[in-house]
Image (cartoon, rainbow over all chains, first blue to last red; front, side):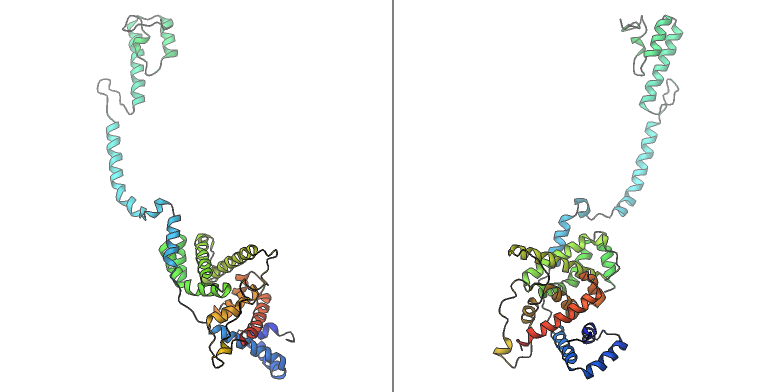
Length: 173
Length: 185
């Protein structure tokens, strides 16, 4: 029989009951033997548990860390400081980019055309070939028309203009 | 422990060395708690390892609304409950209940008080055998309060029950434990 003081008795036994409630409970305990016995039993059990020894154990930390390390992706396991590494490499990378740009931006001295890539170089050659064909006057209008329609930047003019090496007409004959 | 926070933050970023420090800091008490729940050294160590591993894998979701220790014990309590369910289902029990005593708790208690009536000291094995005869929910509550020192609100969070339920479990657990321990004195 706790007379509804179950929670209060439990908390009073471990000294966590609010002071005003504790005063009220103490007044009740002073007059109620059954509640007093319950309170004493709570105290006794708590005292035994408080005295339960802490026993040293086998260290688990190394085994747990090994398990966790094994689960990590291989790149993380290298323990590389990517921030420091990228700061060191950045100037070298920048220098390489500058050199690459300088190599690519060469000038074609024969045509005077500024060449920036391989593709634009081929396109410039094709344009020059068509211009030469127009100047020569050796081609018919139909052939020239077909040449303009079918020309690919990497085709040689010789494939289109009769009378030159590897002569083909507009029909490829 | 406030300085757990720095280690927790580092561990959440994948620093396993920081987590190793957290393990070293909490392992002895956590294994002791689980020893009180399972009444078996090997099981307590296995469950503690499982709890630490689960904690590490869940660190990104740890919001820090409670202390790391409170959260760790909540995980450990859940690991224990899962272990208990498996153990009981392997034992062929159809219904799993936290109200039932721990498996193996029917072993005779060490009658230290009978062989040596002068002995006032109750060793840990004897206490744990008495604890093993409590229903698991009462065992959790009294261990968390009287051994580990968590307050009632923290225990309510760890056990995922209302505050009044915690108070009731602690009250009934202590009453039953006192009866069991009397035979040891």
